[in-house]
Image (cartoon, rainbow, N blue to C red; front, side, top):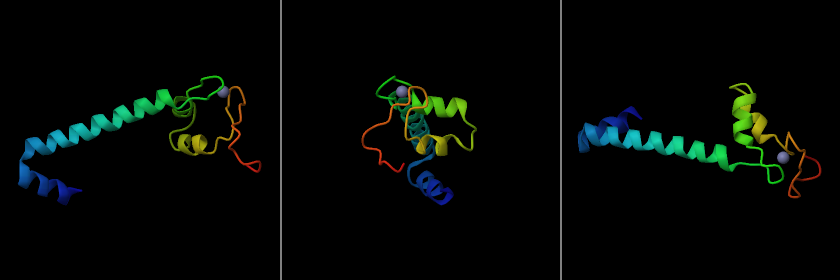
Length: 85
Ligand SMILES: [Zn+2]
């Protein structure tokens, strides 16, 4: 990353590298915000990513979110989930 940053600065100047870094940061934040709003339970509308981030520990929220097989609020279970899960 440092090597790439140095090469980019040498090639195009520090202002461009800073612009790319800011653009990447804002794009990431926008994607995270969109996911927090868009990832919802189809039955009750619970925002699952927001629920995970605000109610689970910082080291466990992603594991909790990925291990969900049903909605924690209304217990909706999608049909595509395998019976063993
Ligand atoms: Zn639900």
